[in-house]
Amino acid sequence: MSSGREAAILEHGFTAVSRDIDNKILKGAKNVKDPIPLSTEDINFPSEALVQKVQEYAKAHLNEQTFNHSVRVYYYAIPGCAILHTQFPHWTVSPSTYAIACLLHDIGTTEHNLHSTLLSFEFYGAFVSSSLLASLSAPQAQNDAVVEAIIRHQDIGTVGTITTLGQVLQLATILDNMGGHAELVHEETIKDVVAKWPRKGWSKCFAQTIRMENGLKPWAHTTSLGEEDFPEGVLGNKLMEPYD
Image 1 (spheres, rainbow, N blue to C red):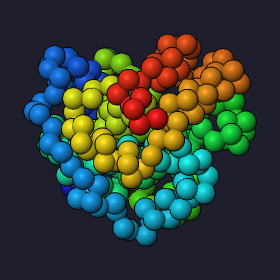
Image 2: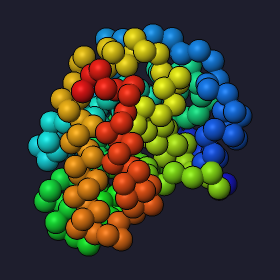
Image 3: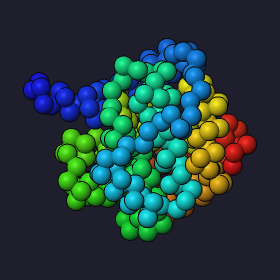
Image 4: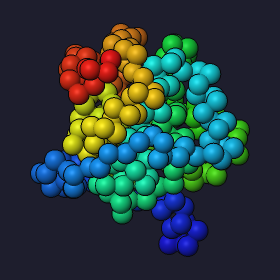
């Protein structure tokens, strides 16, 4: 493996990890170690021009609830903090690449995008994101990492592997959407993140989006999570209920 390829794999979170978070990564435990409380004031959002342009794009195209969800997902798991800091410090992915993946992972759920294609939202969102990143001259490896993570961020399962970036994005989105793996993040961290980036009825908003896509596209990949089980699980998110 060339040094350049190896460096890109490490930088952009392409290292393979198991899809089986419960048995093979956590080995039946609730967490690797007890999480520590962290404040958004202690967590820097990347200031690179590329990330700022992606953030502007996301804010212009996503509704407020989805944009806030996307930013919360960043703060729950950003390298150096929360999930990656206390649970998996040996996993590598640059903050910039993770930020871009967070900001764009639900870009396919806008009403315009849902109606613009017969593709499932993750796949179409990945194509939209790839075109955007190419237009902004993002490195190809970073573009590839974001696309892979977006396509697979609802690819929940136990067989095989997924990129580090993809697994972290899954963990953070499942936490925010369904309250899954709550033991990975300290309650005070969640309170602080939600205070800065409010949910504003996110559970109801996202459940409606799931049902909209499933109605438009009965073949959608989202149905693999359960046509009713998934939206009902989102609505039944007890962890985030006090904040909705």
